[in-house]
Length: 99
Image 1 (spheres, one colour):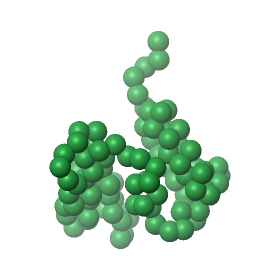
Image 2 (tube, one colour; image 1 turned 90 degrees about the vertical axis):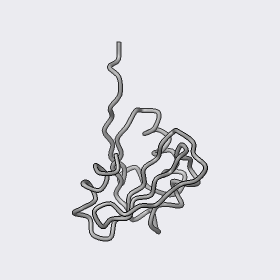
Image 3 (cartoon, rainbow, N blue to C red; image 1 turned 120 degrees about the vertical axis):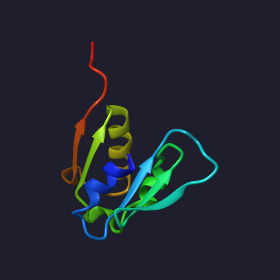
Image 4 (cartoon, rainbow, N blue to C red; image 1 turned 120 degrees about the horizontal axis):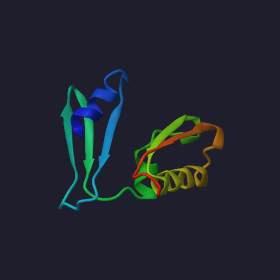
C-alpha cells in the first residue's frame, strides 16, 4: 500500500500520506517513500486523529474520500461536526456487491 500512496502523492508538492491499518502494533511509524513522508498508523482511524492530521483551517479544504459507506459516513460526520460544509465534501464508494 505504501508504494500506491506515494504514487498518488507524487504530484502534490509538500504532501504527507497517512495509511491506517486495522492490525494493532506497538507503535506507529513514519517512512520516506519516493522522497515523500508517509505515516503508517496501526489502529483504526478515529475522529480525534482525523482532525489532528488535517491542515488548518479544515474549513478551507475540499475533500474527496472513497471507501465503504460506514467509513464515508464516519468521515463526513466528523468533518461536518468540525465546521466543514457539505459543498466541500465529495465521495466515491467501493465494497462488496450488494445482494
